[in-house]
Length: 350
Image (tube, rainbow, N blue to C red; front, side, top):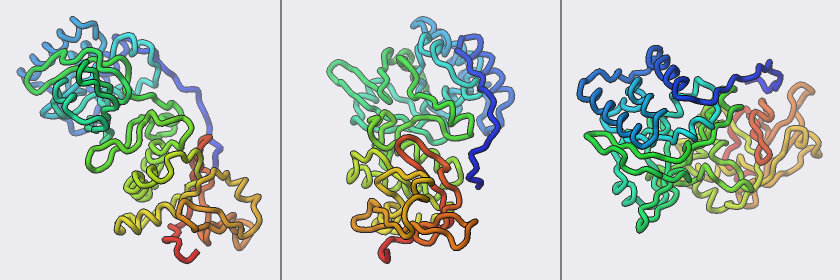
């Protein structure tokens, strides 16, 4: 992986969405998609999508109604579906690259049938799947007495617009996620979705405080850019890190391309992952300015990483003897991720 930040750049084209534009996108996607979803041709399913489209139009959700009618397979590729239809005005005021339209629609569709009563019975913090590549949505607020519900901090404004057969549709005020245009242009995972544990409970909110580290984004960036095993390890122990460091407002992560410890027992995995994380943000230039053999505190109690110069002028910096092969591969105001040649062990010898 090249650490070079020199890339040619072209201005992206964004569309303010309208029903006609979305319909064109949906038809084009349906004609050219290469996934395994089977086009909806069953007469019963067609009638269901037609009934749903009519119900949506009666409630003023004309854009989603059009899409559901012309390309029902976008929403109904599983035996059951719950569609969270975005309000027309919110769609019209949302701008994003046109190639993301199908992903956004599928992020607002779950392969479960969930009525409003079903949703209100779930505890706050419950997560459930969407049709988009394992991305999840979470119940972030419940008001049982007033039958109020928020998903990803968005109010369900029109519950139970249709409950028919395997299909439920609810209206929501706006999209469940903001969209990071820079991430989408670089091929990164741009959807700001919550992180949930193996029990489908919310671990890290996509609407996290702006003063703390963006763990959700860090894991998405790692997992979609070749650092999958380390991303899995970090995700597995993130609950404990958040509990112990909930007010952490900056960090440096040294991410190995291959993280063989990912299958280690939980206590060991937790310690090793934490040994790759500093509670302070260091750019490569700042690391390079430190004295040779400087010690930097990790989030493992009483454990430090040693920063040294390479054995020759072309090697660059090393951390605990492992070369930083990809400086600053990802960064923000709150975090920096440096790629390293190998994992750093468990820190007991440092």
